[in-house]
Length: 200
Image (tube, rainbow, N blue to C red; front, side, top):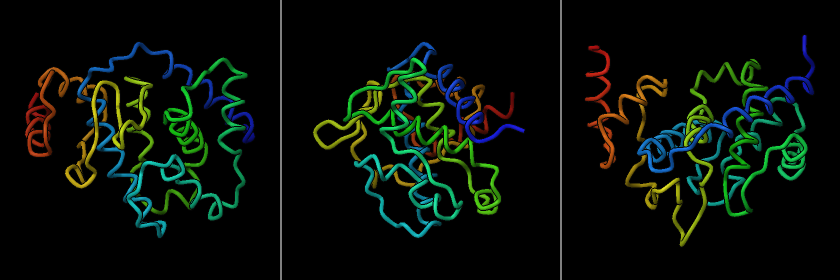
C-alpha cells in the first residue's frame, strides 16, 4: 500500500498528462465545464458551512480550507505545491491565473476522495469538471472583474447559477461540442442534448 507521499507524486504525474494535452481554448466546453464546476463547488461549500459565492480569490476555490480539519490532515501551502510542480517540470501561469489552485485541488481531491469523511457526504466532486476544463485550456484568469476562460468571458454567477451538465464523460462532451460550435447552450438545451445522446 502506498503512503501519502507516493500517492501525491503519482497524482502529480497524472496531472502532467492533462497539462500536456493539446488545448482547444475556443471550445464552448470551457465555459460549460466552468459553470458545472461552480454549481458543484457551491453545493460542497454550503454543506461545509460556507454560504459565500465569492469566487474571485483563489482561496475560495480550495475546499480543503474547510476539509483539512475534518480529515485531520495538514496540507502543503499553494507556494510549496507550486515548487513541487516546478521540480517535476510543470510550469503554471502567473499569479492572476487560476490553473495553480485548480491543479492543487485536483491532486489533493484525488488523494483524499475515498476518506470516509468525504464519501459520507455523497456529493459529486467539483474538481472532476475542473480536470476536464484543464484538458482544454490553462488560461483561466480575472480581467476587469470577469473570469476569462479560454476564449470566453464569464461575468455573471447569478445568470448561470445552478447550471449542471448531466454528464462530463468524454463521449457526451464531444457530442455537445459537435452540436454547438459557436452558441453556448443553456440548461434547457443541454437537457435536450442529453436525451438525444441517450437515444444513440
